[in-house]
Amino acid sequence: MQSGWKSYFIFSKKEQRGIMVLGIILLSTMLLGILLPRKKTAIVSNQSMPLFYFDPNTIDSITAIRLGIPSRQVITLMRYRNKGGRFYDKEDIAKLYGLKKELVAQLIPYVVIKNVDRNTLVKQDVNKNLNEWSIDINIADEKQWAAKTKLTPAIIQNIIRYRNYLGGFTNLNQMKKVYGLGEANFYLLKSHLKLGKLNNTKPNASTMSFESWKALGLFQDREITKILRIRKENGGRIGWKELVILFDLTEQQAEMLQNTIQISE
Image (cartoon, rainbow, N blue to C red):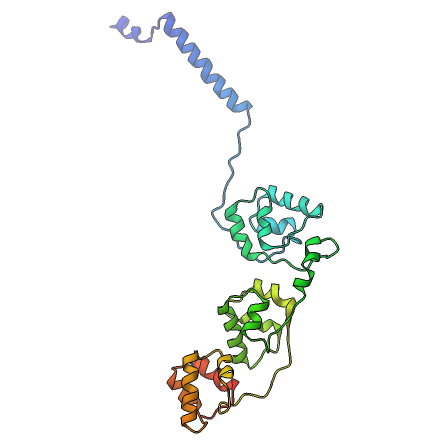
């Protein structure tokens, strides 16, 4: 029994050599793990960085990193600017070498290109005449807004509605409250906006033309036609309550109508 038990721990020369080879391989692997430095695994945060408006021509490296721009691209950005490079349009941020398309798409809406030195920017000199324009936010109509800006028709209508609601703008910053305009668009337009004198004389509902009713931004063409017909049938008179009920105006619309024109109850 004893010899049978010992036989389990007796190895042939071939088996002994195999055990030695395995031992050497295991020992070598452990030594390599100790001697060679391990590659550090990059820790990617799942928390998205809060985005904010920035000018790629003036942003510093710390702020760029806060936007989620990788360190290598931040260095590239600084070198590019130090060599006289500049960004002219929002989409130019995509030309920053190595910047991922997904990050570019997130950053573009927050890019605001501010005024830069014209002596160093050839492109701005070429477009100088295109940039020299202005618009009076208190008197401009839809056609003027469309011709001079790239704003959508919906935003232009919101500007006019809000102007009518206020009875005219008294401060350029009031434009920031226009629904859909956005802070970035406001700062791009701000240098072109002019604040003309308010016309304190309110139009009279009894004599207002089709165009004057349309300028209010409250009624559709067919509704204005109906208003003019009712006014004519009533001998040139039309009441505020009548319009509110007839066209189911909201409280805000009713208040704007009352504040913008001269109209009887």
